Amino acid sequence: MHYIKTIALKEFTSFFKSPAAYMVLVGFLLITGWFFANPLFLLNQSDLRTLFSIIPIIFLIFIPAITMGLVSKENNSGTIELLSTLPVKSSQIVVGKFIAGLGLIVTGLLLSLIHPITIMLIGTNVDVGAMFTGYLGLILLASAYSAIGLFASCLTKNQIIAFIISFVIIFFFFILDYALFFIPPSISGIFQYLSINYHFSNIAKGVIDTRNVIYFGSLTFVFLYLAGTTLDLKKR
Amino acid sequence: MIRLENLVKDYGTVRAVDSINFEINEGEILGFLGPNGAGKSTTLKMITCYLNPSSGNISVENFNVAENSEEIRAMIGYLPETNPLYLEMTVFDYLKYVANMRGIKGKEFDSAFKKTIAKCGLKEVVAKPIHTLSKGYKQRVGLAQAIIHNPKILILDEPTSGLDPNQIVEIRELIKDLGKEKTVILSSHILQEVQALCDRIVIINRGKIVADGSQAELTEDYSNRARLILQVDATKEELTQINGIIPSAKLVSFKPILDNFNEAVFEYTPTNDVRKDIYNYIKQQDWTLLEFHRDYISLEEVFRSLTLEGGNR
Image (cartoon, rainbow over all chains, first blue to last red; front, side, top):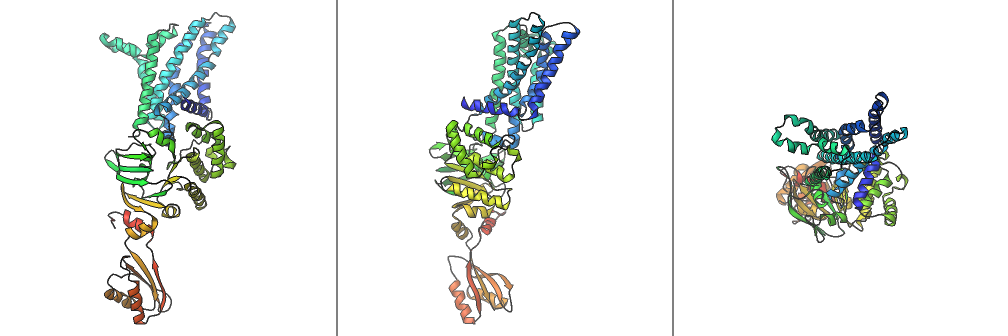
C-alpha cells in the first residue's frame, strides 16, 4: 500500500508541475460549462441531463490525454529502468499510476460540481440522488477509460501513439452501442453488453445496477492487468 | 556474493550474452570492460532484475533472480547508462521519492538524505529542479539515488560517460570512496578509468568473457608478451642480427634519436627472459648503452588484441 501511495502521490503532483494538467482541467470546465449554460440560458432548461450525456464524449479525448504520458514518458526517458529495478511489483506501479490519473479526473469532476450547485442556487429542485448516481457513473466510466489509457501508455515510448491507441480502444467500446444496427440480432446482445454507453446510460438515469458496476469494474481490472503484464513482458 | 552461471540473453535471434560465468566477491570493485555492444549493459541489467535471463542463473547471496527478485533489488543500488532522473522534480523531491520507494521514510530518510548529499556534494542544489543542473551534477544526483538506501551492492553502468575531465575525476573519487564499504560493479569502455578504480577486471566481447583477472594478471597472462627498450649506438642491421643469436627476441620498432644513437624495442615471451642474453651480447659488441629497461604491455593493447575482430591472442 505504501508503494502505491508513493507512486500515486508523485504522479499526481507531477501533473501539476507542467501546464498540461491545468490545460486539461480548464478545457474540461470550459466545455462542460458551455454545455451546461447553453440549455440553461437559451432553452430555459435547468437540468443536468445534457451534461451527463456530453461528459462521456469529452472523456473520450481528455482521459487519453491525461493517461498517455503515465508510463510512456518513463519508457522514453529511461526512468522506467529505475522504477522496475526498485523493489516494487509491476501491479503496484500500475495501480499507483492509475489512481493518480483517476485522481486528476475526479478533481475535474469535483470542480464541475459548480453546475449542479448553480442550479440549486437558482432554486430549481435537483434530484440529489440522481445527481449522485450520475457522478458515480462518471467515475466508474473514467476508471475504465483510465485503465485503457494506462495500458496503451505501457505499450510505447511515444505519448502521441499512446494517445491514439487508447482513443481507438475506448472509441471501440463507445461506438458498439451505435453499431448494433449492423450486427446480426442473434449476437447483438453480447455486443450491447460490451458497450460502454449501454451501461453508462443506466447509471446516468439514476439506477445503480450491480451489472453495470461489475461491467466497469471488470473492464478496469482487465486493462490494469494487461498493463501490468505489459510491464512484466518488457523484461523478456 | 554475486554468482553468474551460464547466463544467456537473446534478443530475438541475436545472442547478446553468451553463457557467462563469473563470481564477484564481497568488497570487490569489479571493472566490466568491453567494446560498445559487447553485452556489458545487458549483463548488468540482468543482475539488477531489469531484464530476465533467457537461460542460466544469477544468485546474489542466497537469493535467486528468478524467485527472489524483490529481495535482490532491495540490496542493489543501480545507476543505469541513461541517468533515470525525473527532470521536473527538485533534487530533494526526487531523492525523497526514491527513498520512499525503497521503504525509507520519516526520520530514517532525514539522516539518509543528509549523509547522501554530503557524500555526493549536492548541498547547494537540493532545492533546484533537476533539469536546471549541469551534467556533472545530474550524474551525482543519479549516484545519490543509487546509494541513498545504503545498498551492499552498487552497480554503475558507464558512470562517467559524457562528463568533462574534472567531473570525471570527481565522480571517480566518489566511486573509490564508496568502494571502500561496498561491492561495486562498474562497466566502462574507458580503460584508464577501470585501471584507476578496479581491483579486478573482466573483459567481455561479443557476449563472451575473454579475460578475467587483476590488472597485472591481464597484462602478463593475456598478452604473453614483454618488452625491452634499448637506446644504443648500433645500426638497424646490427640490431636485427640479435634475432639470429637470440631467436626469442624480436625487434618490433626502431627509431633514430640524437647523433648515431637509436631506440630499439624488442619483444619476447615473459616466461623466457632474454634480458641477460641481450645485455651480454651488447657488452660483447662494445656498444654504448644509454637506456635498457623493461616495459609492460598496456591494458589498452591487451584490450585491443582481445576484442578486435578475430583477435584471439
